[in-house]
Image (cartoon, rainbow, N blue to C red; front, top):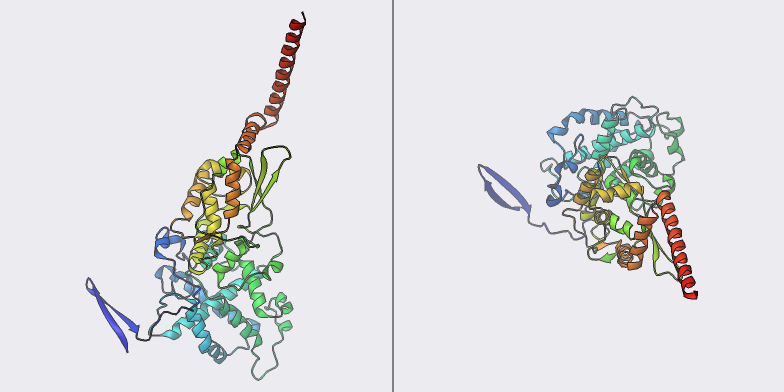
Length: 459
């Protein structure tokens, strides 16, 4: 029996049934969380699906009901594919009733899932959503065959579904997809020959070359979210280096995280000078080509017999558009819940937040091609960057060494003096020409004065 607590709120009574044997599970590996309240209340719509629900957290939301028919339709079409026709209802039932699998699914979610009176409904919802996503990704991968698809043919609708599938609260565990796909491929048809993949027209031809189905599923998943992959390497090569993927939010995070390991410094970052100030001290901002978003690099060089230094800060281009805030907020919320000591994207946004205080900082970074502004207004970009880190807690910072070098460069008197002289007297061709002419006139005048003084002395 459980211990029952009753609490009254106005005219309603809420009964909470707490099992007596419930203890905190310190080894629980929850990957899918509800966004913490303090973060969520900053911008509710950034964390709430606008069109389609996936998984248990937003199941039954009446505002998302209009897409349920299409989800069911995609689910049914998936099971009608030739490579699924050998699967019987009992096969699916056995797959979803596996005790270990059910427990793994439950443990993937943090908090209450609902479906208390009908736990089977949870797994029914997960299976239906998984098959809908399977079918959507397969159609996207073979878009030439499905160019009339209801979702894919309309850019705004596809983008809305894409964003909903990135939201932290709108996720299915990634292993559900890979295990289900492998199950379909490895299950032998009953009372018939083994399934011949080469004779299944709707079966993507690329899958015949894959040794395992889950490798192919990762490929079609990456293809669906390709807009967030900015790395120069071929995606097929890069997939080999992905860590164990927890869900779609985690996959997009891996698209953006740096390839190389940065030394992690405990504590929050120290204050960094703004982009405008650093530019005034001679820091050269350069767009870093074909690298992941958070992979920032710094190069410093000294000059013999000169007191100043040259500094180049290489930053991958950050494209700011309408969906940027939603994507970044959900990835940052994921890091707060799952990666509290590897907050690479939170650190990256904090770094940008220090560089950008005003529209002038944005304007400079746009000129340097470090920021690609598709919002139109530099003020809007500055406001967006400055608000993303609200209520974000960072216990470590991976750009501490870079910040220290930048601050030391700015604090060097000779670096600032050299940069000031360059910006005032040699900022463009005309200014440089005028400065050189003026310098020659000055030298000629000085030489003339010295010659006159010598003549007077000799006389």
